Amino acid sequence: MLIEAPRHAEIFGSVKIYDVQKVLKLDSEKIDTPLLRSFSKDEIEEVLNKLSVIIPIKNEKIHLLDGVLRAVPRSCPIIVVSNSQRGKRDVFKMERDVIAHFHNLTKHPVTVIHQKDPGLGLAFKEVGYDRILDENGFVRDGKAEGMIAGLLLAKHMGKEYVGFVDADNYVPCAVNEYIKDFAAGLCMSESPYAMVRLHWRHKPKIVKSKLYFRKWGRVSEVTNRYLNLLLAAQTGFETHIIKTGNAGEHAMTMRLAEIMGYSTGYSIEPYQYIYLLEEFWKGEGRYSEATSAGIEVFQIETLNPHIHEEKGEKHVKDMLHDSLSTIYHSRLSDRQLKSKILEELKANNVLKEGEKPRKNITIPPIKEIDVNSFMKILEEYSETLVKYE
Ligand SMILES: Nc1nc2c(ncn2[C@@H]2O[C@H](COP(=O)(O)OP(=O)(O)O)[C@@H](O)[C@H]2O)c(=O)[nH]1
Ligand SMILES: [Mg+2]
Image (cartoon, rainbow, N blue to C red; front, side, top):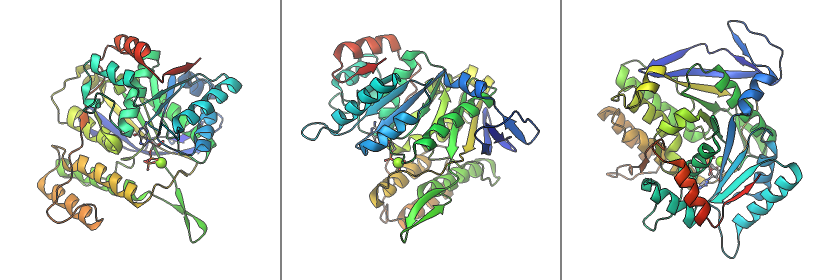
């Protein structure tokens, strides 16, 4: 693979954010110059062997899940965490059938679980991780909650890296690329605490019956702008360094995933930036090893465009609310930034005059969880966990 070398990075305490690096070629000879970084198939494969891929899913078209599963490189075990409908119309059962069929044909290892499995709630409760639970002891609804459940399963597998891909992607080969892009980013990292976030070159939409290759998603553009304003509020220097505030497709070293703070639902991705800055720039150095090793954030621009399911206006507004409220409620945000965020939310009809953004529930790092006890309880009480090995 051939990628632009990082031209520029900005450093905030222990956090180093690299500017976007374009994927120039998926398959390439070794060409290393000051402007280019190349990775052989073997180098990529070495990382893929240590990576598990988590797919959060909620009521997506079953064909899309099928395509995504088939696109994951063979060396990466897959973990599907579903919050899909059960009962009379059992979407979860359809997902399990597709996964079983996929595994029978390909022998690709897949673990699947339902987010509302009572055993999952119990396992989290017993290890003292109740910020992820609702008042009835089940794991709360939300994409972040599903991702964290997947993370625990990945940690138990003992994998060194973890990557997340959405289930609603229309282009399976794009997913295949994303995972290889994760590997390339992780190859570049010098610190054991690294993260790779993907940036889309284009996010096509159908406009007047034609494909129109939009450069940005609407929410991403706004989220990135306010994350950068938050940096500027602290440093006094304007910046455009953050371009992946809402990157659902991202990967981390397990060392970083373990000490990462999370936030509910769709606020998880922008909150990762906020958490890293609050903790490793303006924090008290709770994790001294990470503080001294440094945290690297790579932003990689994919070759493939991102074509996923359109979820409608309400979804866009909810995402905007979740993303901006995370910035609004950060202790790094000042009065001027807060009032700009309020104006933005009002202009987008998300908030009315006088309303304040809701505060997202934050979920602490998973580092202290005893993963063996968690798994023991889960395996004993789970109703939906299946491991196709
Ligand atoms: N496990 C789980 N997955 C979810 C939940 N909500 C959304 N997802 C999945 O998370 C991924 C991203 O969600 P999506 O609605 O497409 O958001 P967007 O792509 O960021 O606009 C998709 O694969 C969804 O099916 C949830 O509550 N639990
Ligand atoms: Mg989507």
